[in-house]
Figure 1 (tube, rainbow, N blue to C red):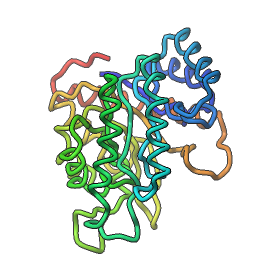
Figure 2: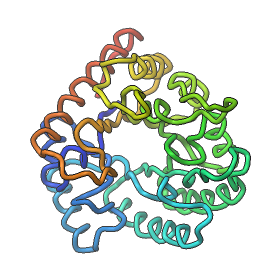
Figure 3: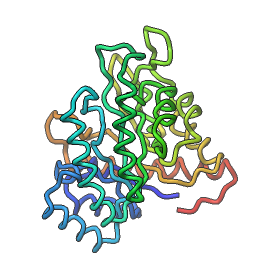
Figure 4: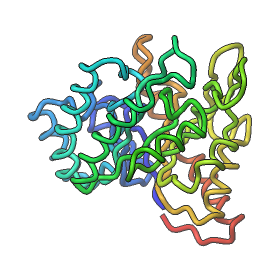
Length: 298
């Protein structure tokens, strides 16, 4: 098992992202944005600089948190799909150069003016199949996240994507169900149950994201993974008991939410929160191994 995280929540630049990773004693970053730019959109010169700094540091990019087919892309837009395929083809040689084996993708934004059973699912599957086939042909494993997209509308929608996109696997995010409507249930849709979702899809999960919090007064309040509800420990206890030995990636959202346009967060607080979050998730995972009677090896 290994620990990693969205280090852009600790710091914007690659130097500080590497430094905070080393402070935790980790050797992996889940790369999303570097100086505010997604890795598949960096200039060639900027990417060369990032690659050189990573090579010199010994820190690796274990997973690429791409924007491909995400909640900002519409299944109704031909331009969005064209952009996705351009990003796929820019990402692949960069991932191969970095030795990155996993790439996070989604299944396009939910169409809010349509019913759950009227979400252009066949067109989604066609496009996600095209994306997945390119990555698989290059020896890269795409993983679908249960986020604000078709596959995130509920566990049955995630399985629907898997059933229709050969070779796709899952990254499970422990925080997203908390604030997401469960469209597997009748209206008015309740929020999703984290453990119910996990239990339904866990056989297909090869990677885990940890976010945590409570949905209060119509909004998500983020917190450390050992505070409030026990959903993170329940998922990780079950995963470890079942033999899970993949990556655990932290996405704290405590000080800085990368897609929140409201101002610039304090860099000292960002880094401190990221490190504290990492320390706490390490303890939760070690405790899970102890409960399962397994020896923890990072």
